[in-house]
Length: 252
Image (cartoon, rainbow, N blue to C red):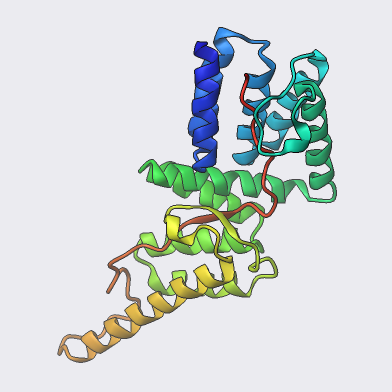
């Protein structure tokens, strides 16, 4: 019953885009019952949501290899009701492998770092978030999400001109039409990265214009590189989820 409740709570966390918390809770449940197929399957779903595709495939495969006769009773996909959890896990693994085919490893790693960075920023662990955003950018500098988060780092550090440069590149990137799945600002979730980055770029531009106007009213020498002027609110760091992970199943 305790493992059952933990799985239900983890499903709720996943529905709220709190994949890292769900994974932590499921890890505790796994210690209580290391062969529970529903816990393993939900942990695979959480890992997939967190961009850790290697772990997701490992857990899906473990469930499939159990050849469990336990059937699914609660799921949003009615087509799976009454079928075995192992059968569904095998299908999920096959779908994930197909989705990852043709995607360069650096892009997969960059997505993982972007997702982890957003989570860390939401946990007020800025140093870790900053490091992961920069890793993501170095791995995949053409990704709209990596560019947006690189701009977020610059804006947070007060370098508005650099932030403006990267926001501009983000909304021009080829994949800027993807929708934001995870963000430090919930209002950005579900919007296209194009719109989010464009809004951020316009806000930075307004801040730079305000800074210039304020400096022109002063008699002191004009500074050449404004850093942090006019910055009141932060844009969202983002990560897209173009393909939603399968719905985790309740072990009942």
